[in-house]
Structures are given as structure tokens and as C-alpha cells.
Image 1: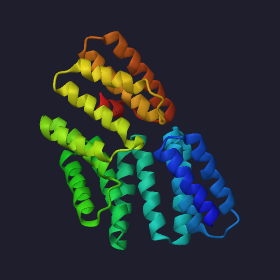
Image 2: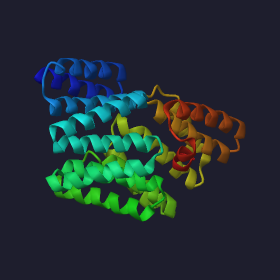
Image 3: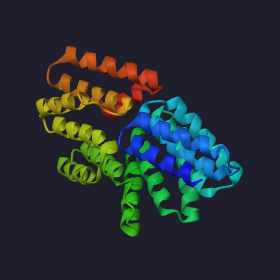
Image 4: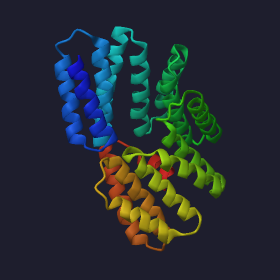
Length: 284
């Protein structure tokens, strides 16, 4: 069990947090091979959760969905509350990516309810953060604000901060919508202060949108062109950056270049199983 746990944890850090996907997935799969000799469904389920995160970063959304469904089945078999919370959070992410916001919300609300009843503050914070992002996608602005504020309150109470970068980015996007650019800048700066490689590309996109909203499409284009020129670790993130770049290029009078970036982004979205229309609502 210790050997399997070590491989799974190393794989999660390498792949999900640092972007070294191939190494991360190899460690995650080896962890499951080691654990297959053990009759411990709750433990095996915990390994699935980490590997699913690696599949997400690698752009293998079918693999991500399958491994998280296995996580849910094993956690149900074991009657493991923590595993059920984890699996439902991760399945919520799977369905958010695919644009099935209703199913995403239901899974995430189940996770939040169980996390709160079990006193798992970190899991509840992650679920609240994910519900804020789902509500933003669904254009339920008041719900997005409510869930984001619940994350901030929980972080103040417990000191757990892992969900904060994404939550601050949601708040920055909400402030952009309301036209409060100074508040958007403050939220974005808070996000950047806590971000690592897994969050920074999103932060760069939001900063580019802020530059565009402030009337500087040239700066927005330069930022986004540099962003899509990097060797990024997540094909979805690259495509979302291309779509944001297309918006900036249109604003800068470069319609032909914008169309090329949109087509490149759409090709990736279709391959992954994302909804191009929802992605435009998110980033265009």
C-alpha cells in the first residue's frame, strides 16, 4: 500500500501540478498495478482519483471519465465517505469540461453535501469553488458570487488555500462583467500570488481579458501570443488561450489571424469532447 501510494502521489505532482504528464501517468498506472494485489477497494479508489487528474492534464478526457467512474464504484462498494466526495467532485469536473453543466452541478452538490456532513472542510472548499465556476458558465452570477465567497470564508476559518487561485479568478471574471476593473485587478493579483503552473495559464488569460476591457488590445494580443507559443502541458488550456487570442486579434483589427486561431481551438475542443459554444461563452 505504501509503495502504491508513493507512486500515485508522485505521479499526481509530476503530472497535475508540474505538467510532466507522461511521467505522471506512468507512476499512476504503476500504482494501480501494485494495488491490484490488495483487497482494499477504498484504497484502490483513492489511487484512481489521482490518476484521473493526470488524464485531465494530458487531454485524455475519456480516460479521465472512466477512471473517475471506477473511483465512484469502488468508493460505493467500500462505503467510503471521503472517496464518494472525491469521486463526485472529479466527475463534476469531467462533466463541466464536456459542457453538461446540469450533471456537473448535481455531482458537485452531492460532494458538497457529504463533505459538510462529514466535516471535511478542504473538500467542501473545493466543491464550493467548482460550483462557483459551474454557476459562472451557467450565467448564474449571484450563485457564482455566493459560492466564491463561501470559499474565501472557509479559507479564513481553516487556513486551507488550495482552491483559492481558481476562486479569485472566478471573482476577477465576475468583476470584469460588472465593469469594476480595479476590483478585477485586485482579485487577479490575489490569484497570481497563489498560482502555480496548473493555474497560471488561466490567470494569464484573465489578465489579457482585463487588458482588452481596458482598451489595450495590442497588449492583450502580445500576452496571448506569447502564451500560446509556450510548450504548455494541457491541450485544453492551449485551445482556450487560442480562443481568447482570437477575441483580442479581432479587437486589434486582425480578423484573418483571429479566424485561424478560432479554427485551431475548435479542432482541439472537438477532439477532446468539449462544447465549442460553451468555450466561446467562457473565453471569447
